[in-house]
Image 1 (cartoon, one colour):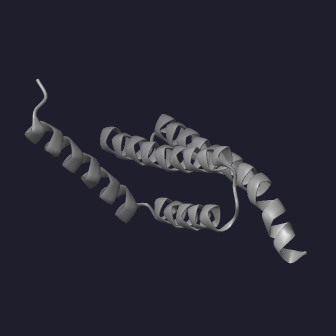
Image 2 (cartoon, rainbow, N blue to C red; image 1 turned 180 degrees about the horizontal axis):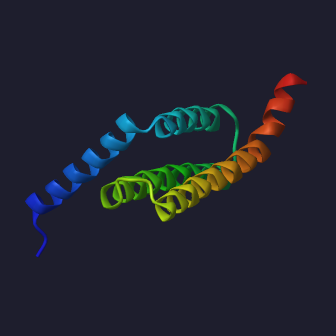
Length: 122
């Protein structure tokens, strides 16, 4: 059965996790700032609905990957506090996933926004 107090606790834990990542991860804070700027540009420029949807999904994807990266790093540090080769490999792979996602988001963002900036200059 659905418990309101259980649901409230779940939301509290989720909020606590987001606060932890925001406070502890400089990259996450930077990505949130970029997301706010990007969403602001989405309001300023006359974008199509599908472009806004893609932007929102890419922002979500980058932030979720950063959260997963933080979770994997914390877990690895807990299980293997001393740097083990495989811990480094896992951390690097997660960082690569975040980087790749961010790079694709940047490319798509440029494809969407660049024509608007060019029109603004003309």
